[in-house]
Length: 261
Length: 227
Image 1 (spheres, chains in turn purple, cyan):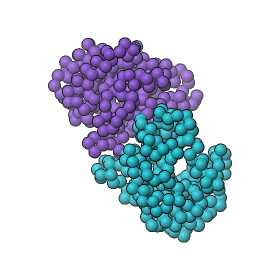
Image 2 (cartoon, rainbow over the protein chains, first blue to last red):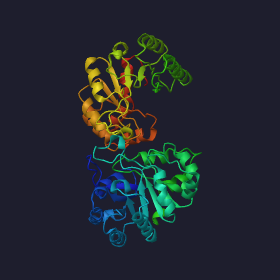
Image 3 (tube, chains in turn orange, yellow):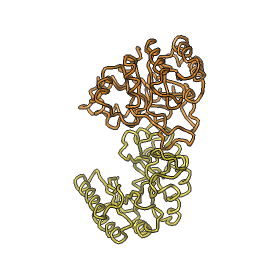
Image 4 (cartoon, one colour):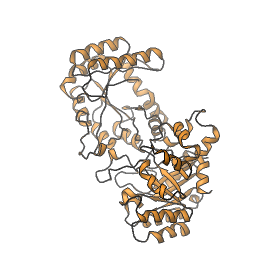
């Protein structure tokens, strides 16, 4: 069974997208045997009021019964914009969203901004997963209107150190995963999953050895990245790197554990 | 196809010979698995032509170069003419990016000698009989920009390798360049280069062309055949 913990719908304003609606993403999932996708709305990166994007996703998911068991919606929130507290409640309690995606680089705030810390703590209290990404697109070929900065794991660690008992997804790990030894130990002891879509997993066997088999989960970063590279990283693990049980954890088991499904 | 270009600037020509010898050793060790490309530096004009002769005589089947000088620099003319005579592929590192390494140079590159798509278009027009391989449209460069520039130059082939496996890249490239001008390559990004081709909207026949058929046709022109 495959659960994709990093998929999006919505638009990327700098490029024509394909497979970026729930209907077309579901076709993609069926073609490649993906049972469930964690999905958020890319539009939330660009709307000042991110809640409009969450409403769009909620409405789209409501529009067809076949979506109900196949998608797990996550909200996009901005803790320095008005009303995030109410938006969080609406997304969790009314829309049934199981996590929140935060984009400090796009929304222009520090990851240790008091509002961000407060939001992460509130998400923790509600049992929601908090998602941070290294990048949405490769900045080397970005649009001239896009941001130029990308993150490494070190950039995300300050919030993890601050709120260690929250649950985290690290999406599209495209840059350095090197950390201080003490941060490595923190990571081993918290609820955190790194998805397999990012190019930093050029040697996934080594990464599993370093951080543990419970720390990784299948992800596509669709529709930005191609749909199969994240899966290839799992399926091509050699027997001495991962047995079948470990692969199954990465395909779906770890995601089920954190998502509580 | 294995190669070892010299990636540091201003190196002595002996470095090029040493790298070629390393590839020749690999070809000898695994003759069924490796074809070999040689590397040269056109700044060393006489030595480069001698090295091409030596490497071809030892069984190598193509040229790979980095950014010693731009591909349309006149220093390359004798090398390109020789490669055209041999009917072998000339692969050159290329780039077009707006913000590489944080530099905001409008469609300029970080390294002044990196060949741009416009440089390739220029040299491909001058030598329509030569076979050029524009390297790695998935290497973090603006692949849409590149495909649009390269569209009208049938002697420029494009490999789809690189670490940036953006969805839609292969389909976009085939739309602009056609199914006969795309080549599989990894650029050591093995998962991305295969995953992107497998998840594209191509037919199996088109995938077969990209993974094998198109490049083998080029090899056959130069007297080789990987089939």
